[in-house]
Length: 293
Image (cartoon, rainbow, N blue to C red):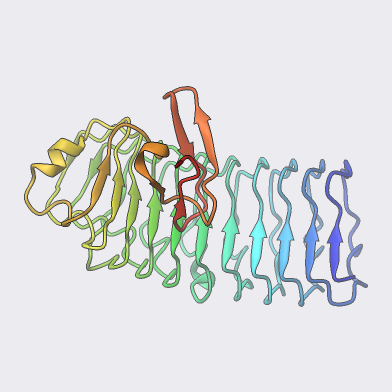
Protein backbone atom coordinates (compact mmCIF):
# COMPACT_ATOMS: atom_id res chain seq x y z
CA UNK A 1 0.00 0.00 0.00
CA UNK A 2 2.85 2.36 -0.79
CA UNK A 3 0.89 4.52 -3.24
CA UNK A 4 -2.81 5.32 -2.78
CA UNK A 5 -4.10 7.18 -5.83
CA UNK A 6 -7.83 7.92 -5.86
CA UNK A 7 -7.69 10.57 -8.57
CA UNK A 8 -10.96 11.57 -10.28
CA UNK A 9 -13.36 9.23 -8.48
CA UNK A 10 -16.06 11.80 -7.66
CA UNK A 11 -15.60 11.10 -3.93
CA UNK A 12 -17.73 13.39 -1.78
CA UNK A 13 -16.80 12.08 1.68
CA UNK A 14 -14.12 10.01 3.37
CA UNK A 15 -15.07 8.17 6.58
CA UNK A 16 -12.96 8.60 9.70
CA UNK A 17 -10.36 5.85 10.00
CA UNK A 18 -10.44 4.85 6.34
CA UNK A 19 -6.63 5.06 6.09
CA UNK A 20 -5.78 3.84 9.61
CA UNK A 21 -4.76 0.30 8.64
CA UNK A 22 -2.50 1.22 5.73
CA UNK A 23 1.01 -0.15 6.09
CA UNK A 24 3.64 2.55 5.53
CA UNK A 25 2.04 4.45 2.64
CA UNK A 26 4.35 6.86 0.79
CA UNK A 27 1.81 8.96 -1.08
CA UNK A 28 -1.91 9.63 -1.10
CA UNK A 29 -3.43 11.45 -4.08
CA UNK A 30 -7.06 12.55 -3.83
CA UNK A 31 -7.08 15.09 -6.66
CA UNK A 32 -10.13 15.89 -8.79
CA UNK A 33 -12.82 14.65 -6.43
CA UNK A 34 -15.75 16.43 -4.75
CA UNK A 35 -14.55 16.48 -1.18
CA UNK A 36 -16.02 19.34 0.86
CA UNK A 37 -14.74 18.39 4.32
CA UNK A 38 -12.35 15.94 5.97
CA UNK A 39 -12.39 14.21 9.38
CA UNK A 40 -9.83 15.95 11.63
CA UNK A 41 -7.84 12.77 12.33
CA UNK A 42 -8.04 11.34 8.80
CA UNK A 43 -4.26 11.20 8.24
CA UNK A 44 -3.00 11.08 11.83
CA UNK A 45 -1.77 7.45 11.73
CA UNK A 46 0.24 7.88 8.55
CA UNK A 47 3.60 8.86 9.98
CA UNK A 48 5.49 7.46 6.98
CA UNK A 49 3.58 9.55 4.42
CA UNK A 50 5.81 11.59 2.10
CA UNK A 51 3.30 13.19 -0.27
CA UNK A 52 -0.31 14.26 0.20
CA UNK A 53 -2.28 15.85 -2.63
CA UNK A 54 -5.82 17.23 -2.37
CA UNK A 55 -5.85 19.42 -5.46
CA UNK A 56 -9.10 20.23 -7.29
CA UNK A 57 -11.65 19.45 -4.60
CA UNK A 58 -14.27 21.60 -2.88
CA UNK A 59 -12.71 21.93 0.55
CA UNK A 60 -13.72 25.09 2.40
CA UNK A 61 -11.79 24.50 5.61
CA UNK A 62 -9.03 22.32 7.02
CA UNK A 63 -9.91 21.19 10.55
CA UNK A 64 -7.37 21.70 13.36
CA UNK A 65 -5.21 18.60 13.74
CA UNK A 66 -5.70 17.40 10.16
CA UNK A 67 -1.94 17.22 9.52
CA UNK A 68 -0.85 16.18 13.01
CA UNK A 69 1.77 13.40 13.21
CA UNK A 70 2.81 13.85 9.56
CA UNK A 71 6.40 14.51 10.52
CA UNK A 72 7.81 12.80 7.42
CA UNK A 73 5.65 14.62 4.87
CA UNK A 74 7.74 16.28 2.17
CA UNK A 75 5.06 17.83 -0.04
CA UNK A 76 1.50 19.03 0.59
CA UNK A 77 -0.68 20.14 -2.33
CA UNK A 78 -3.97 21.98 -1.72
CA UNK A 79 -4.44 23.82 -5.02
CA UNK A 80 -7.83 24.74 -6.46
CA UNK A 81 -10.14 24.38 -3.49
CA UNK A 82 -12.35 26.91 -1.68
CA UNK A 83 -10.29 27.16 1.51
CA UNK A 84 -10.90 30.45 3.29
CA UNK A 85 -9.09 30.04 6.63
CA UNK A 86 -5.81 28.46 7.75
CA UNK A 87 -6.17 27.90 11.48
CA UNK A 88 -3.17 28.65 13.76
CA UNK A 89 -1.13 25.51 14.41
CA UNK A 90 -2.44 23.71 11.31
CA UNK A 91 1.06 23.05 9.95
CA UNK A 92 2.94 22.71 13.24
CA UNK A 93 3.75 18.98 12.87
CA UNK A 94 5.10 19.27 9.33
CA UNK A 95 8.75 19.29 10.35
CA UNK A 96 10.07 17.83 7.08
CA UNK A 97 7.84 19.53 4.51
CA UNK A 98 9.74 21.36 1.79
CA UNK A 99 6.85 22.22 -0.56
CA UNK A 100 3.50 23.72 0.48
CA UNK A 101 1.20 24.79 -2.35
CA UNK A 102 -2.06 26.63 -1.63
CA UNK A 103 -2.68 28.37 -4.95
CA UNK A 104 -6.20 29.13 -6.19
CA UNK A 105 -8.20 29.19 -2.98
CA UNK A 106 -10.07 31.94 -1.12
CA UNK A 107 -7.64 32.44 1.76
CA UNK A 108 -8.12 35.88 3.27
CA UNK A 109 -5.72 35.96 6.25
CA UNK A 110 -2.35 34.58 7.27
CA UNK A 111 -2.15 34.41 11.06
CA UNK A 112 1.10 35.33 12.85
CA UNK A 113 3.17 32.21 13.47
CA UNK A 114 1.26 30.15 10.89
CA UNK A 115 4.44 28.96 9.13
CA UNK A 116 6.90 29.12 12.05
CA UNK A 117 7.21 25.36 12.61
CA UNK A 118 7.96 24.86 8.91
CA UNK A 119 11.10 26.94 9.17
CA UNK A 120 13.53 24.07 9.38
CA UNK A 121 12.56 22.54 6.05
CA UNK A 122 10.22 24.59 3.83
CA UNK A 123 11.75 25.62 0.50
CA UNK A 124 8.73 26.58 -1.62
CA UNK A 125 5.57 28.33 -0.42
CA UNK A 126 2.98 29.17 -3.07
CA UNK A 127 -0.04 31.26 -2.11
CA UNK A 128 -0.99 32.73 -5.48
CA UNK A 129 -4.56 33.46 -6.56
CA UNK A 130 -6.11 33.95 -3.13
CA UNK A 131 -7.70 36.92 -1.34
CA UNK A 132 -4.96 37.85 1.10
CA UNK A 133 -5.08 41.60 1.72
CA UNK A 134 -2.62 42.00 4.58
CA UNK A 135 0.69 40.39 5.55
CA UNK A 136 1.21 40.38 9.34
CA UNK A 137 4.67 41.50 10.44
CA UNK A 138 7.01 38.55 10.92
CA UNK A 139 4.78 35.98 9.21
CA UNK A 140 7.72 34.70 7.12
CA UNK A 141 10.51 35.35 9.66
CA UNK A 142 11.20 31.70 10.55
CA UNK A 143 11.38 30.44 6.96
CA UNK A 144 15.16 30.47 6.84
CA UNK A 145 15.40 27.79 4.12
CA UNK A 146 12.72 29.18 1.80
CA UNK A 147 13.89 29.62 -1.80
CA UNK A 148 10.67 30.54 -3.61
CA UNK A 149 7.69 32.57 -2.36
CA UNK A 150 4.63 33.26 -4.52
CA UNK A 151 2.04 35.81 -3.38
CA UNK A 152 0.82 36.76 -6.83
CA UNK A 153 -2.81 37.55 -7.61
CA UNK A 154 -3.97 38.53 -4.14
CA UNK A 155 -5.25 41.85 -2.74
CA UNK A 156 -2.08 42.96 -0.94
CA UNK A 157 -1.73 46.75 -0.89
CA UNK A 158 1.21 47.14 1.48
CA UNK A 159 4.47 45.29 2.00
CA UNK A 160 5.32 45.91 5.69
CA UNK A 161 8.90 47.02 6.42
CA UNK A 162 11.27 44.06 6.30
CA UNK A 163 8.43 41.60 5.64
CA UNK A 164 10.94 39.36 3.86
CA UNK A 165 13.79 39.80 6.36
CA UNK A 166 13.78 36.14 7.44
CA UNK A 167 14.15 34.79 3.91
CA UNK A 168 17.94 34.57 3.90
CA UNK A 169 18.02 31.93 1.16
CA UNK A 170 15.21 33.25 -1.05
CA UNK A 171 16.02 33.15 -4.75
CA UNK A 172 12.65 34.27 -6.13
CA UNK A 173 9.73 36.34 -4.79
CA UNK A 174 6.58 36.97 -6.82
CA UNK A 175 4.15 39.66 -5.62
CA UNK A 176 2.72 40.41 -9.06
CA UNK A 177 -0.94 41.27 -9.65
CA UNK A 178 -1.70 42.83 -6.28
CA UNK A 179 -2.59 46.38 -5.23
CA UNK A 180 0.87 47.43 -4.06
CA UNK A 181 1.40 51.15 -4.47
CA UNK A 182 4.78 51.68 -2.81
CA UNK A 183 8.14 49.94 -2.40
CA UNK A 184 10.30 50.98 0.54
CA UNK A 185 14.07 50.92 0.71
CA UNK A 186 15.38 47.56 1.82
CA UNK A 187 12.27 45.58 0.91
CA UNK A 188 14.33 43.12 -1.15
CA UNK A 189 17.75 44.21 0.09
CA UNK A 190 21.09 42.41 0.26
CA UNK A 191 21.16 42.64 4.04
CA UNK A 192 18.03 40.54 4.37
CA UNK A 193 17.90 38.65 1.06
CA UNK A 194 21.48 38.14 -0.13
CA UNK A 195 20.60 35.48 -2.75
CA UNK A 196 17.43 37.07 -4.16
CA UNK A 197 17.81 36.93 -7.95
CA UNK A 198 14.25 37.19 -9.29
CA UNK A 199 11.53 39.63 -8.21
CA UNK A 200 8.20 40.17 -9.94
CA UNK A 201 6.28 43.38 -9.20
CA UNK A 202 4.29 43.12 -12.44
CA UNK A 203 0.70 44.40 -12.59
CA UNK A 204 0.76 46.53 -9.46
CA UNK A 205 -0.06 50.22 -9.16
CA UNK A 206 3.32 51.24 -7.79
CA UNK A 207 3.36 55.04 -7.71
CA UNK A 208 6.28 55.71 -5.42
CA UNK A 209 9.39 53.99 -4.21
CA UNK A 210 12.39 54.63 -2.01
CA UNK A 211 14.62 53.19 -4.64
CA UNK A 212 18.14 53.32 -3.27
CA UNK A 213 18.95 50.01 -1.64
CA UNK A 214 15.59 48.49 -2.51
CA UNK A 215 17.04 45.40 -4.19
CA UNK A 216 19.67 42.81 -3.38
CA UNK A 217 23.02 42.87 -5.18
CA UNK A 218 22.18 39.34 -6.36
CA UNK A 219 19.24 40.58 -8.44
CA UNK A 220 19.27 39.19 -11.97
CA UNK A 221 15.81 40.09 -13.24
CA UNK A 222 12.99 42.39 -12.20
CA UNK A 223 9.49 42.40 -13.74
CA UNK A 224 7.55 45.68 -13.84
CA UNK A 225 5.03 44.78 -16.54
CA UNK A 226 1.82 46.77 -16.08
CA UNK A 227 3.27 48.91 -13.28
CA UNK A 228 3.45 52.70 -13.07
CA UNK A 229 7.07 52.33 -12.03
CA UNK A 230 9.21 51.92 -15.15
CA UNK A 231 12.49 50.27 -15.96
CA UNK A 232 13.70 53.59 -17.34
CA UNK A 233 13.20 55.23 -13.95
CA UNK A 234 15.22 52.52 -12.25
CA UNK A 235 17.96 52.65 -14.86
CA UNK A 236 18.36 56.36 -14.24
CA UNK A 237 18.45 56.14 -10.45
CA UNK A 238 21.78 55.72 -8.72
CA UNK A 239 22.17 52.60 -6.58
CA UNK A 240 18.90 50.88 -7.50
CA UNK A 241 19.59 48.04 -9.90
CA UNK A 242 22.85 46.14 -9.37
CA UNK A 243 25.27 45.94 -12.27
CA UNK A 244 24.10 43.39 -14.86
CA UNK A 245 20.53 43.09 -13.60
CA UNK A 246 17.77 43.03 -16.23
CA UNK A 247 14.42 44.78 -15.98
CA UNK A 248 11.37 43.80 -18.05
CA UNK A 249 8.55 46.20 -18.80
CA UNK A 250 6.83 44.64 -21.78
CA UNK A 251 6.03 41.04 -20.76
CA UNK A 252 6.22 38.84 -17.70
CA UNK A 253 8.26 36.25 -19.54
CA UNK A 254 8.45 34.78 -23.01
CA UNK A 255 10.55 33.89 -26.02
CA UNK A 256 12.08 37.33 -26.49
CA UNK A 257 13.79 37.19 -23.09
CA UNK A 258 15.61 33.88 -23.46
CA UNK A 259 15.12 32.78 -19.86
CA UNK A 260 11.96 32.44 -17.79
CA UNK A 261 12.98 32.48 -14.11
CA UNK A 262 9.61 31.14 -12.93
CA UNK A 263 9.91 27.49 -13.84
CA UNK A 264 11.73 24.41 -12.59
CA UNK A 265 13.33 22.76 -15.60
CA UNK A 266 10.29 23.43 -17.79
CA UNK A 267 8.77 26.81 -18.51
CA UNK A 268 5.01 26.27 -18.38
CA UNK A 269 3.95 29.23 -20.51
CA UNK A 270 0.32 30.29 -20.68
CA UNK A 271 -1.28 32.95 -22.83
CA UNK A 272 -2.73 35.89 -20.91
CA UNK A 273 -5.46 37.42 -23.05
CA UNK A 274 -5.79 40.46 -20.79
CA UNK A 275 -2.25 41.60 -21.51
CA UNK A 276 -1.68 39.75 -24.81
CA UNK A 277 1.48 38.14 -23.45
CA UNK A 278 2.95 34.77 -22.71
CA UNK A 279 3.39 34.45 -18.95
CA UNK A 280 4.96 31.66 -16.95
CA UNK A 281 3.32 29.63 -14.24
CA UNK A 282 5.26 30.07 -11.02
CA UNK A 283 6.93 27.06 -9.48
CA UNK A 284 10.23 28.67 -8.48
CA UNK A 285 13.78 28.14 -9.74
CA UNK A 286 14.80 29.01 -13.27
CA UNK A 287 14.38 27.27 -16.60
CA UNK A 288 15.30 27.43 -20.24
CA UNK A 289 12.73 29.26 -22.30
CA UNK A 290 10.78 26.74 -24.37
CA UNK A 291 10.13 29.34 -27.10
CA UNK A 292 13.76 29.67 -28.18
CA UNK A 293 14.60 28.22 -31.56
